[in-house]
Structures are given as C-alpha cells and as structure tokens.
Image 1 (tube, rainbow, N blue to C red):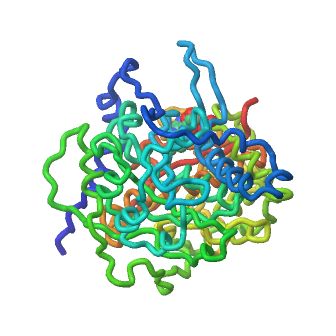
Image 2 (tube, rainbow, N blue to C red):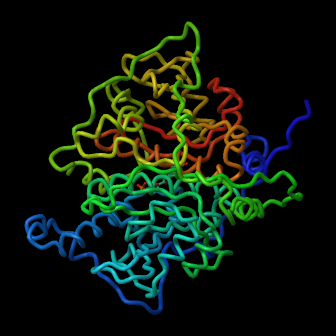
Length: 512
Ligand SMILES: Cc1cc2nc3c(=O)[nH]c(=O)nc-3n(C[C@H](O)[C@H](O)[C@H](O)COP(=O)(O)O)c2cc1C
C-alpha cells in the first residue's frame, strides 16, 4: 500500500523535533535587545478598574448584586491570567509572573473579553490588562453577532453574554523558541484554560470552549494584525446564576483541512506556515456540527499489556475546603519549581495527582465541573516515568484513566537518561516522577485535519495545569518541560513510536 504523505502538522512536528545531532547547530544566540514586552498598550479606551473587587467582599456582595457581579469577574480574571508575583531582575526592571505558567516566562497569550452588552459591561471589546488588573474597553459597538457568525453559530453563544478570546502574539515566544514556539504557545494556552475552567467554577461560571472558528473573521473582529497576533481559542462564559445559561455540553473542536501539498518550507517559516494552514474559513462538519456524538465516546483505554504489573489508582480526593477557598489560594500561589531534592514522593501523593487531573467526576460534590470541556481527550495518552515513589517500582507506566490503573511497561531507573532527554535540565534528573502526554498524530490528523495540532497541545497544557495545582496543594514541586529530545524519549522509555510526545510535567520534592 502506498504511504500516505505527511500532512503539514506532521511535517511541522518532525521538523521541530530536538535531536542531539542537530540541536547545537540549530540554536541561535538570543538578541536581548529584541526581547518583546509581554503587555499590550491601548492609546484610547475607557478603563474598568477591577482591583477594588479583589478584596474579600463576601458580606458586601451578598447584599449588593452589582458588587457581587464585579467581584466574580475580577476574581475570575485574576485567577486565570493575573499577576501573582514580581521578581527583581539584574537590569532593574521587574519580571511579573502570572497565575498561569508560561514557557520561558514569555506570556505570548493575550486575553480579551467580549460583552454582548450587560448592565455592568457595555457591549464591545475589552482587553484584560494584567499589569493594572483592569479591562480597557477599546471598541464599544455591538460585536456579538459578528462573534456568533465567526464561530459558525456555536449554540453556546446563543444565551451567554460574555466570552473570552485568547490570542497569541507570536514573536513573544518565537523570539526565543523560533519555529518550535508554536508548540509552547498552545501548551501555555492549555494551562490558561485549566485556570479558566477552575476559576469559573469558583465564581459560578461555566466555560464552554470553542476551538472551531473562522480565524480571520475573529482577528478582524478583535482589530488585531494577523501577521503579529492570532486568535487561538474562544470561551463562552455561561453565568450559572442565570437559569437560561445552564447549557448542555457541545462539541468544542471542529475539523479543518489536511494539507499534504505544501512547498519546501525554510527554517524560521514553519510556525507561520502551519498557523495559516490550520485556519478555518468555513464549518465543514455538517448540520450536526456542534452536537456531541455519543457513540464516539471511547469505552476502553488504548493500551493494555498482558502480564504487566497493574496498580489501582483509586484514592480519596483532595478536600479543597469550605467554598473551595484552598483552590483559589493554590491558583494564586502556584509557582514552577526551579529545583528538586531527588527525594521520593509517596504512592498516595502520585495517586492523588492523577485523581484530580483525570477524574474530575470525583470533584462534583465539592462544586467543580465533573466533565469540563477539553477539545478531544480521547486522542491523548499518559505515560509516567517513576524515578522515586515509595511503594512503586521504578520504571515506565501507562496510565489507564478509564480503568484507573497504572500498567507497567518497563522496569528500570531512568534518572541519568531523563536528565539527558530533558536537554540536561536538572529538573528531569531530580524529579520523583515525569509525566508524558502523547498523541498519535496520524490518527489525530485523520479525525480533525491539521488543526488538531492546536487542540492536542491545548489539551495537554490543560491537563498539565490540573497537575500543577494538585501538586502545589500537596506541597510538592512541579514544572512543565517543553524542550526534550523527542524521538529518544520514546526509545528510552518504551513509549510506542506512533505516540508523539507533546509535553512533560515533572513532579518532585522541591528544594526550599
Ligand atoms: C509549556 C511550558 C513549558 C515549560 N518548559 C520549561 C522548561 O523546559 N524548563 C523549566 O525550567 N521551566 C519550564 N517551564 C516553566 C516556566 O519557566 C515558568 O512557568 C515561568 O518561568 C513562569 O513562572 P511560574 O510558572 O512560576 O509562574 C515551562 C512552562 C510551560 C507552561
């Protein structure tokens, strides 16, 4: 049978792999003079200050619904992408860190709020200004219908009044990571979506993801220059205090085209080429486009290995406290760990991390969404390298979320190899556990076309954020790693070669 040619997403993935043979030749010196500023400025616009609504105003807001409305929006944005730390740097200008992590601290994502027109927020476009925790109203006409049309009349915009649009300013990340930045941009946004999901639950909103939209139409709606910045995700915010906005789940990902007849693309042009090739112009999914196809739900975990060691991961859930206040505190104090001691995690800790991340249905009685939106988790698999977990043999395991068990595929200590595979980063050597999210790209492209490359990375980042928050709550250390020797990871750990590694989350005992 003739081989089906690689699609552009597969080609991009192959071309942006880090390989020990070529990485040195490919890396360029960073031009610090050129480093982009991760904030957007508006010359004109009306500002809505959200700071006064940060204080714990529970008593005041109980009596005043207007105060309560602002309080909810203010907390939602702070917990999603607000500033949560100020770090001094050698050149004197502070580095601001946010509630969502970002590869290299470059923060390519911008968050916009679109209002249909509510008594509190007049219709139009707003940019979230994290530096001042305010919204700038830079366009004040009715844009909702334009948003609905650009989102192919997604049913989740019918009754909702507010939507978030996440864009990316490409150069903020490609300045450092060049073509491979595209992967990190979407992983970052996935982390941001993880925060949005949980911050919404804390503030009585339900976020509905919209991954299928006409890219150029949304860019025009937001008045952004498509060469510099592009919309990458929309989120309808359903206000759960309004009965009409309690909506069922709809599809979040729409298919796009699969491009196989692309020209020879030079280094430095791959990111832009892939982005353009994965844009949607129209909805090709047919009349049932947004309806969830129940038959599609997978019943079994992808991998089972006869005679392998299996460990049940069923465990008690994290108690997030009264009104889930510990969850909000955890979101606001989360930081990526810079160094681990190498000491062991307990098996209980590992199981709790997995439970919070992959079993959201165990958290409904605490007020969290039991089935939050992802784009398509059936395409993502999880492998875990155990370096030091008391009560669990070292080796590589497949995590079967449906069966809720770990299935061992290799026994070995991988410390030395993982240090190397993570490009010499000590986080990879000293962690207790490294967790790998993977996907069969060929199959994924077969289902959604090349646009799936975006969906996969956002979903992997979203899972990564849940791991981050569970780890912080358990007083463990955690950090993402998006730079690794792609193919060697599969070889060393025994992860099937069809599974493209998307992202690594390291977990361990932090060095204080
Ligand atoms: C997609 C992604 C990739 C990352 N990759 C690395 C990495 O390879 N090495 C590392 O030390 N930190 C990595 N980080 C952590 C970032 O450096 C960190 O999020 C950023 O400095 C901001 O700090 P904070 O997470 O404490 O807010 C990554 C984070 C994300 C979201």
